[in-house]
Figure 1: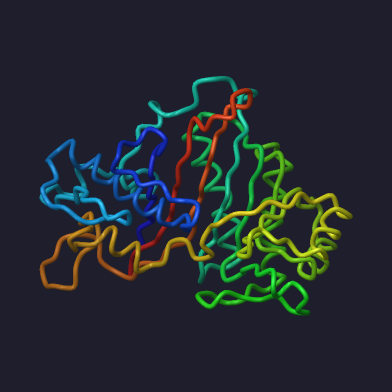
Figure 2: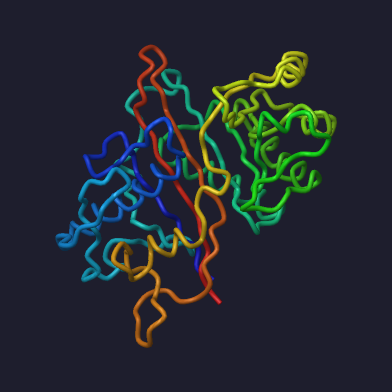
Length: 315
């Protein structure tokens, strides 16, 4: 089994090949294009790209040249393959820690256990801190797989699940939350928050926590109409309500295989089905995605924004 660490680097420094999403689009458009752009930039150090592909905005972009072996532009470290390789010494924020608000959102993907997520929480946060050269983050929001929020369903007795994932067990959520509480206890994370929790779900979840969420981030489809029941309950429990437009399953396995495979848009890291194809072989399973944003407090300017993703490939 090989662990793959995919990274976008700082997308605020990206050229025109990085397509940032319009407000109406979901965030995986930004993630996928930023990953592809970072792969391409790393490969171009060794050979120019020659082909073109049409991106989500209809513009012609350079695609990845697979003449460059992936071993040239990736790096192995502690049993993981970094795609592309990262020079952490060259990253980091320009000012002292007190000058930034650092927010991180951790997306757990389907088919991972609560025990695995406890380990993944530490891994994801460690990567962000290493990238930013910072000792802590201000807010960590967790997104559980298959859990979605719909304002129209707020009055339902049971939570609603998205169609592309399985409903999350409350006990598994609590076990995962305990890992975030540990990060909070160490001072690594100052505040922790949830995503997609309505009032019914919060009422069942909160009594089983030691550190209560400071934030509940929800995806509201109808012009940000937040249900009154949730507004009142969140106010009572001193939970700040935030909205977002992220995907529940932000990085499906098919998308990762397209990014890393031997197709026209692929990076050539994964072997194709044909005999003799070069690259890593085996089943591919994405595990998590983490999005991080560092905002300069006195100016409200985003200095650094990016993503890491982890997937496992093997028999």
